Length: 271
Image 1 (cartoon, rainbow, N blue to C red):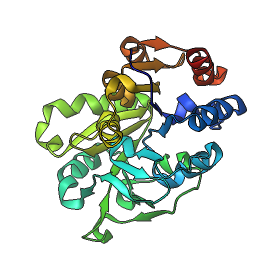
Image 2 (image 1 turned 180 degrees about the horizontal axis):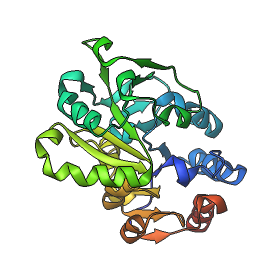
Image 3 (image 1 turned 90 degrees about the vertical axis):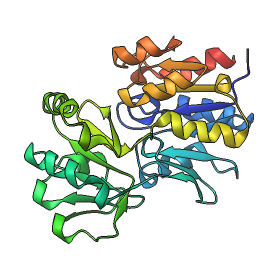
């Protein structure tokens, strides 16, 4: 059995407790593994400003420390700020999908490296509340968006039942998704990313960079957007609070994020 060298963690409802914080126990375990030479990688749909406070808490400040952002759309070196990989949309890529979403009377937020833009014409979404005010946020009319604007993802934040209904409409319109994939990162948040981008594609770039194989990768998660990395990794750990589909893919299941499930599993696994 290959030794685990790279550990990747979804954040919301996985690594973070219900108060959106790192517990002291989890912080201690991850620091110990990092100091022992393991690669500790936060693998999230979040942009960097929303991850930076947790990176600082975990002292991920070695020259070979990376973070996977935007559900795999960006792989960034934490120290140098250089991107190993960066996939993004241009406005021309998304016009038809935007019109379709507008027809469904749903809001859209564009998420770039360092800012979030809410499309004013589409109405105020609850997404800005999920950002914890860590990123610049503004509303701009669709006609006033800069022509050269690019962004790593766009999101539709809406009640779970509303998103369930919207997703059921998409298979009838395959022309809309030729340049993009969509995935849920929470029950009330649907994310659109460039075609082929997911957490597994981002982690594979890191495995290649470090000359590691998937058997040396351990991942933790709870939601639909974690499925690709669960299929990639030799060891995949579902949280006790994970959706059933993720538990079915996992090699292991741990306690919930409210019960320090990540720390509990790592303490037992690495003794």
